[in-house]
Length: 369
Image (cartoon, helix red, strand yellow):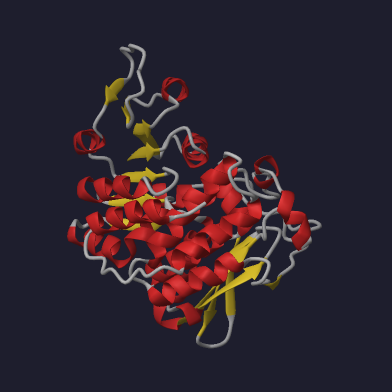
């Protein structure tokens, strides 16, 4: 029986993980979880699914309960539970600190928090090696690439092809984007996600983050990574091999597949979700319009520059998206805010996680809305 901990229990990743674990109740047990603010909801999920430990990572009050042990320190809980795998489903840059804690305490980090890789870069993976912690990617695109590389052999893969749905506005005219509201931007055509990642998918900043993530996860340079528009979200990514052949990973757009692949440590005793139905299945692909989606080109630039640039890209985007949600800026201004931040000098050398946190603070001081 695999013992698992889910960080970010009430988020979309956490809730999908709970659903997946129900399907594999004879193979995996959720022994602990974390929540930041939605404590009542987390307690309800824990009671319903027999999760005996819950860490509250904020100062939010918690009702008294004798059925669940409440923790206020994540590291203490993880050290006590000694789980086989920890899923980091925390949203945003705060997830990096959680990833560091997991690497210090647990043998396997199932990583759904892409910001950990984008900001941590090569430092994250050297730290994982230092603590004998294996990182398994959970993003659907990177889980697919990971599977394809394992199948084909790293030496036989020449480049990576990351698919993008194009979001809800891929066919909108540029002038129509000016008055897009947050309510419209969070309505993704194929995925059910939280507001931040949904808006990132609408601007394709999320795909930019995935380009940076792929670079560090699989050690491919920018010129060996492609992005292609694929609205159906059935082909999650592809690899080109040295022979010229292309291999793809396909499944319905359901995060239960990559999540359970990581939590079960690659071992599926039975189907994780609904199998792909080829009846009336039409798949299409097209080139990315870099003028419509400049965030992806910005990300490739960050891959080439490395250093502090990926952290700046991520941090400035978080600030801009939050401002958009609060009605402070327009949808079309999100990228402008990030571009202005990237145009500043970020030659600082990143040699520790503290350096990353300092860069974040500096970006927050310098970003102009």
